[in-house]
Image (cartoon, rainbow over all chains, first blue to last red; front, side, top):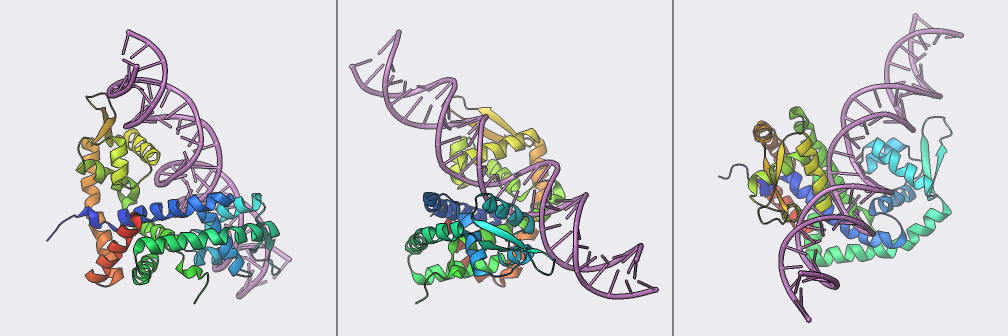
Length: 140
Length: 140
DNA sequence: CGCTCTTATGTGTATATACACGCCCTTTGT
DNA sequence: ACAAAGGGCGTGTATATACACATAAGAGCG
């Protein structure tokens, strides 16, 4: 009966995994002048219509104020446009044409990164097991 | 044959999981005035003897320069002491008595956090599956 | 109408992360 | 011995993350 086996520390393992995965995707995202996290936000904005900042943050499981700054950066780069919602409450976001163009350019790199992770994990089954585990942990 | 299913994006899922897990452990670590990441580094320093910064970073799967700043912070807080290695090459680190005391105070909180994650995942089997997946991804 | 309550957004501050770069000291080749 | 090479360390800069707090504006009520 092990006590305090830090190799089983969920924090350590989750952060190590996120660092490794982020470096992996970042290497490719850099080729089109963005970070992997920025790619994620652009994808989320393209998918969702008329979402407030809070709703978008919820969907990304991200702290709202973190998202505010990430999007502010994307606006400064001219990739995202914000609009006040008609009912006066809140803002929502959409891609600029430049943003859409850059996202299209990044998509093949994303597919490559996904494929490389799949190769690393060995099989589709392992891949899905990993995704499932990450999704469970995200709901903590 | 799905193309571009972003719910299967490893980056998104890994980062979401790390954010959720970090928030979980951070809430407890704050009770003793540290962050969860600082706890990890303290544990690593306590375990390893005579490790250079680079070796420690390697073991933590962390960028060396990231670790440099994390440890500098811990030194300013008086929790860690650095020493030049005798052979002139490199430094190594050890806990101050204050650091050891604080780490001891944090350990029960860590055990609680681990137990809560186990509860969330439902079973020991699920827990080990998640750890295994994270460790695989860390080796990317 | 004005007061309060709720909801939504943004800022201050601290920490974490990593790439590019520079510095210093040791080792090695001649 | 000295110059070149390499390893190890820290800094400059940019981004990411989140808690505490501040701000603003619609909604409901007397």
